[in-house]
Amino acid sequence: MKVAIVGNSGSGKTTLAHRLAAGASVPVLDLDLVFWQPGAPIERPGAERVADVQRFCREHESWIVEGCYADLIEASFAWNPKLIFLDPGREVCLANCRSRPLEPHKYRTREDQDEKLQFLLEWVADYYKRDGLMSLASHQALFDQYEGPKERTPDTRRP
Image (cartoon, rainbow, N blue to C red; front, side, top):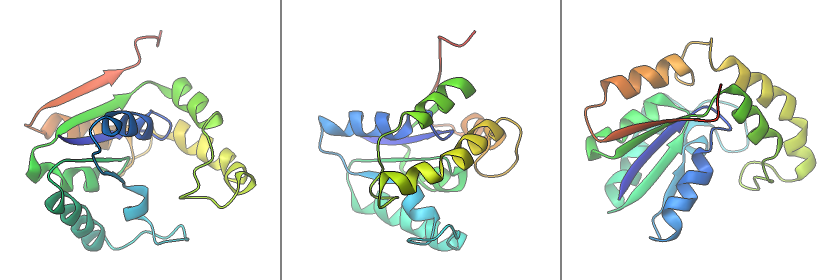
């Protein structure tokens, strides 16, 4: 199994990745941990983060990578993963962010995580109109150009 999952924050990427990995003991790479400097909201150099993703893909027979970074998802394409583009819609993503459990690999305490919630909600809402690696436009272009196995899963509950 080789799977790359992309979508907005709160779209369900992490939940899906861990559900898929659970039965098969497949390693999951959270791309947040590759994109940012440890402990700081500073981007790592592009070549370093791409190299880390490629190393992870090369070193594991089966794997799942998940995140909102188009460049890092694309770095996995040489291994022909199944690309899953989660697009449940703005309101679902916002609701998921409001109810997410503590992410101890990103925040020391629930209070630290909650302090960042308003920023996260604004970030999630902006996904549909911003440009760049972490935008709907970038994810759609990535999905459209990928010639391997892929599926886009919109929220069927969306009006």
